[in-house]
Length: 97
Image 1 (cartoon, one colour):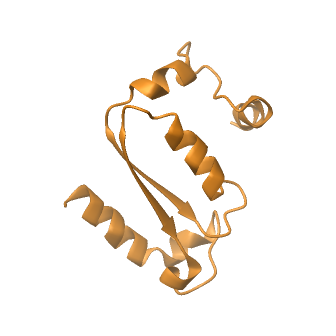
Image 2 (image 1 turned 180 degrees about the vertical axis):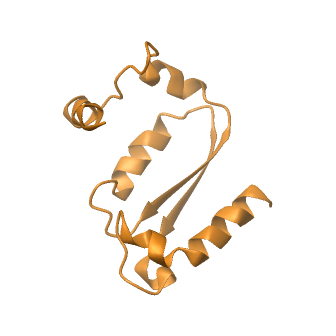
Image 3 (image 1 turned 180 degrees about the horizontal axis):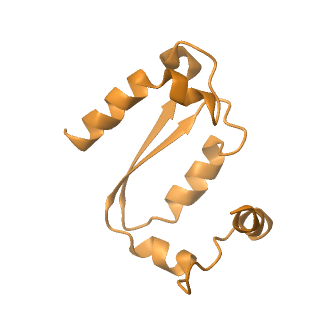
């Protein structure tokens, strides 16, 4: 996994996975996508999520941000899960509009 992360960080592209060119496949994804970034996420900040969702050109993308104010506590890449009740409600609502 770390090798994959390093590849993506160095090149801005996802590496092949099991012989599949992920970069070539992403524009063909036609499923609905909910992409959420967490406030102060040092590993997957909002611009990184934006770069990924931009590659999903055929998908219907819903973009969301989860803030510390919504969580009721400071959050980041890991700690949001301890304060994710509101986010879980939002995700459930996205699945059942």
